[in-house]
Length: 362
Image 1 (cartoon, rainbow, N blue to C red):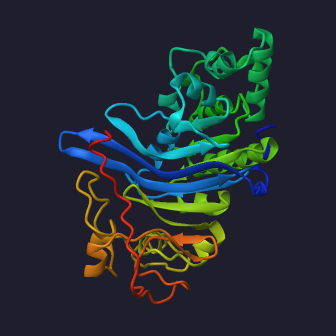
Image 2 (tube, helix red, strand yellow):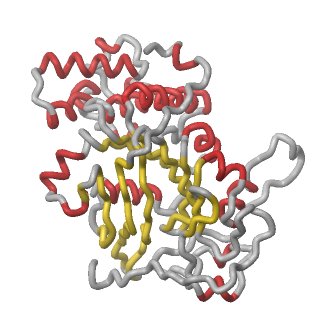
Image 3 (spheres, one colour):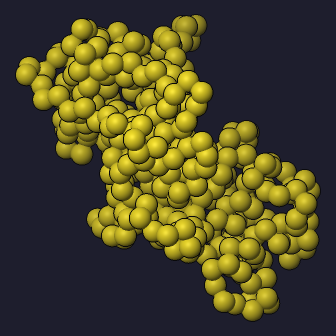
């Protein structure tokens, strides 16, 4: 695959399967701080199907990346996963021994981390770093591993790949370093790729090339993708389903088409209204007042109520559960209405508190 091919028309998304490959239920991760326990991930549930791209979107600090690290059990001190399950092909990853988990990471579930310049080791060559996953997970000769590394660098559009294995990260541009990270994460052809803000700090042209590359590789390899981003434009073109996170929880989940057509949660609506419009020349952008709450001191009831223009005393006192209001469209809000019009409070709601006493578990 040459770099010229990456500038062609947008590649279509892979056709997702019906079989669930990853099932996350009530995932809870906390961090011990001097001020108390911070609930970074607070009861997150979602599933991922074969060949599907699920986007997890939300503001910085909402728990997107911590969710990914929790799935791979990469949360270090002072953080700890304290509840829930993460089933990969029927096996709960949270119950595996660390030695068993190491056989999963990189081979079956791989991750592209943010900021490739800090993710790549500056004192080791690109070749050494990209070949490491194969050396750990597969018994191949040194020649076979090097051939695979060259093939993968070519696949992600690195020119003269044979001559670049001995180069160091600083000898690559930002876009090329990101391609190296993609090649490294795909060396063992994983079943699931977690892409954490894969286009951060790249200019828009390079962003488009990287995202087209990911779509093409997903289709060719048949893998599933969890795409973590705050960019709704990226979500629109690169995902089948979307989970919107706020304050450590999923507040809305739907197909990408339905979410963009009929957003139901006030937070999601606020995100869309904050986007610039081609038809709104001269108009000030709308903003969501306030900021994401301190995870150590979460508000009572609905976590969005301090910033929500529709909140009333009921929202302050009661935590909404995630319910299916439209086919495959789930929302956690007392005010949400099925057709997305004039929100009203549902009568006699069933209150479900997703919180747990994590002090004893941490």
